[in-house]
Amino acid sequence: MDDKIITLATLTYEKSHLVKSLLENEGIDCFLEHINLIQGAISSGVQINIKEVDFEQAMMVFDAIREADYDVKRKEIKLDKNIKILCPVDFSEYSKKAVDFAFDWVSRLKGEITLFNSYFSPVNSGLPFSDSYVYDVNLEDLSSDLRDESETKIKEIEKELKHKVKEDELKGVKIHSVVKRGVAEDEILGYSQFYEPSVIVMGTRGVDKKKVDLIGSVTAEIFELAKRPVLAIPESFNYTGIDNIKNIGYLSTFSDVDFLALEKLSQIVNPLDVNIICCHITSEETYNKDNVKLDGLMEHFRKHKINKNLQFELIKNEDFLVGVESFVQSYGIDILSFTAYKRNLITRLLNASVAKKMLFHSTTPLLVFHA
Image (tube, rainbow, N blue to C red):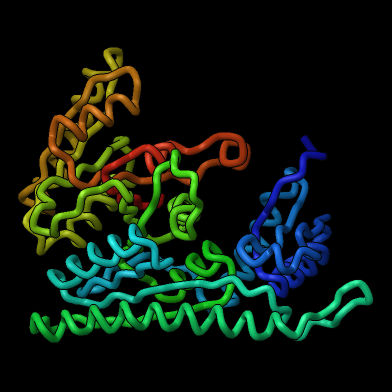
């Protein structure tokens, strides 16, 4: 177990050296991979590899670096009166679908969208060169071209959305765009801590797709590691407008986090004409006990008058994922939401979470909250 090597993160050239130095200062052995494949690393970055046994300590160092990058302090999530949506894009067709969804959503709730794109540049920013490292002046031009291309494309989308705002006379709707240099998942997670959006809206592809695109390949990581709610819009989802989103499902585990998640969900969809259906997947053995718990959950929300369009259901199935599919089909669920729990180290490394399994195989948009 102690000798097993895992990848902690994939970062830009300069960030990988910074993290390596800080890890070694904490007595954590690590090494960099793809460091000399500058041209080949344009799309993949430099990997920081560590021993599995050091993962937890290394993550503490890595999280501290991420927070320092954006001058962020951890705080309780508080939803603003107006919604703020962070919408990462890679200019693919399905990420544009996520933009359309985000724009329609913010148009109803009033608030702002920040379009976000990250590009990976292999350029080393002023680090000392070793004898084995040959600097290619063409890389500077390449980095500049990549940034110019990203900024041009994202400004085109921003311009289109601003035109819609003006044309439809949408008051209280603001559109912004941000371009960052770095590895996508790292930059999205870091910026989300700085920006503190009400929700992150992203497009995603199915697991059977052969082509690897930026957003489709990182949504699973954002799903699991973000501290803000994340809405993933599948490529195969037939989006026909926000008015056709009628039923939002929430998968309950009968834990304390359900109360907070359902309150957040009610807030961010409040102006929309939707029903929220809270469901628990139960078994034959626990059905009676779960029925009592469901009554308690119902009473809490009725007492506090959280949402008049909130209903509660039990689905009996011994297979959780089959039960979820039955729930989605039986109740015409347009968006499925749930809370993802922070898994322990070994579980996270060795097993795909239920959230990831659902993400890759679902044709229904998934909205995940984080415990």
